[in-house]
Image 1 (cartoon, rainbow, N blue to C red):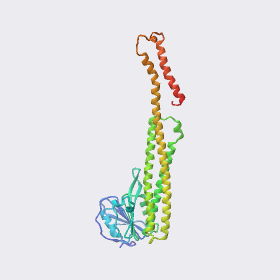
Image 2 (cartoon, rainbow, N blue to C red):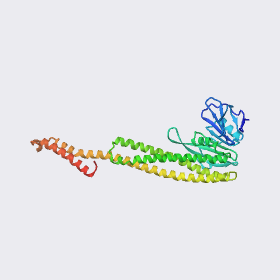
Image 3 (cartoon, rainbow, N blue to C red):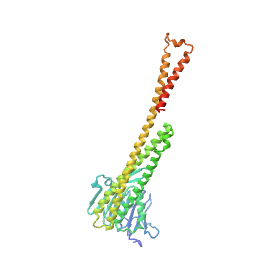
Image 4 (cartoon, rainbow, N blue to C red):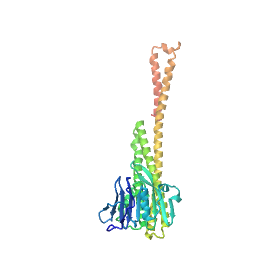
Length: 366
């Protein structure tokens, strides 16, 4: 026994040499973080929230009374540890990526199994989707994920100060943290769309002549950024809808053993999800508008290019006709004997060029 903690050290697995894998165990208001480093021994950190984090150097530990186990890219040995601690079946990654509603939300022997596509911001500054699973029982909450997600890390740090003890409380708090994170990303996308909208409809761009190359580069960049925002919103929408289904199902499935205030929090959570869904739809409408606007500007720039070619071809036809006419070299061509025939030919060429240019100018083409 470790003094002050309900943890019994025991050897239950060999060293794991894969990096970036960890199991977070939460028991009786404490956070136990087992982190496995490359080629190094397992580490178990304990944080009571009132004292500095305590490092236990013993190899793997068992926390039979753990409330929350958070598995990140778990190995088979880690899955076995979690299953022995909780007595719960841990779904595989293939199970978590199922798209049928019946495979994402169901109960099995009184245990609630939930999964969802989680939208997160990758290192490449793009939105990605990763599966996240929840296994909720009366005494235990088990989460399975395959990426480092800020919402989970933030809640883990916050947990030791929150006074939460039950699995349902942790589950609801975690969902609230995920919703807060989704709201932050939606706000970020909204700000980016606002910036793109202002840059697209800048008044000086409507009056300043820009080179075709510069205009093409700017419009292509704007189109790429708008598409990126649309992709992010699509991923966020999948996450928001999944959270809404999970909250609705959990509110009914754990009604018997969840505290009344948790049902109220789940109701509030569903309302927040509905508002986020509406906001997501609003932003999707703005994305569609910007896409149409940018494509319209691209068409205008292309039409301007075609217009230039049209003007050049029309202006070049009359002088070509004059040059071709007097270049036939027939014997009976009176203009060849004129004293000022050469100047007359040039005058006809210049006039045939100027008249179309004046006409295009009057029409506003140039």
